[in-house]
Length: 192
Image (cartoon, rainbow, N blue to C red; front, top):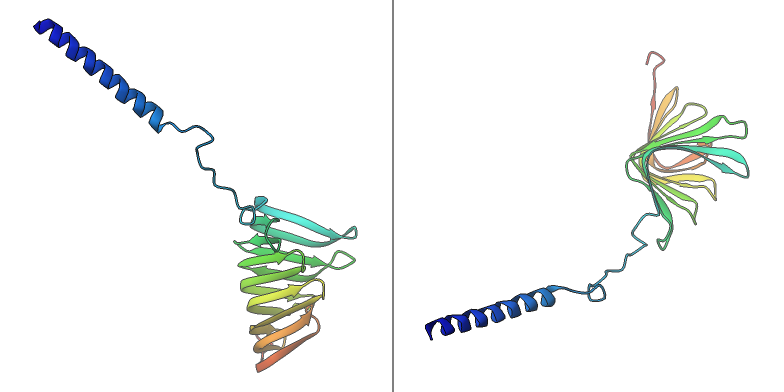
């Protein structure tokens, strides 16, 4: 009788253990349809990501720009499609004869495709054909209107003088400009 009791207990224990294992295995396993899938928000994901890029951009078959950047993102599904250059950009604009007529460097940049608007941030440096250097912390370049402008502090270094002011507006070759609130003109000695 003692042996039968042990056999009965082992049989009950085996059945109970099997039931626990069966419940555990089937209870924790989810089918593919039960696994929640979080939809991907394409407005926040770039369509393209590239590193160490140098590219030429043409307009009507004429090469107009050369862009060099360490990182380039294109967000084409955003409510306003844009390009992002989070590690800076070096941009050269070419005239009809392929001469550089404007050059721009900055720490960060965004290009809004629909508006054809560049926003340049952080130590923006622009050089025109005459060699004049424009420096500011934030500059906008509207390609459609062919204007460059800023409301930030601007410093323009020419051969004979340095001009400072708050805000400016210029044509896109930086040859005709107006400083909104001039602050000073400092002559530069020829010895410099």
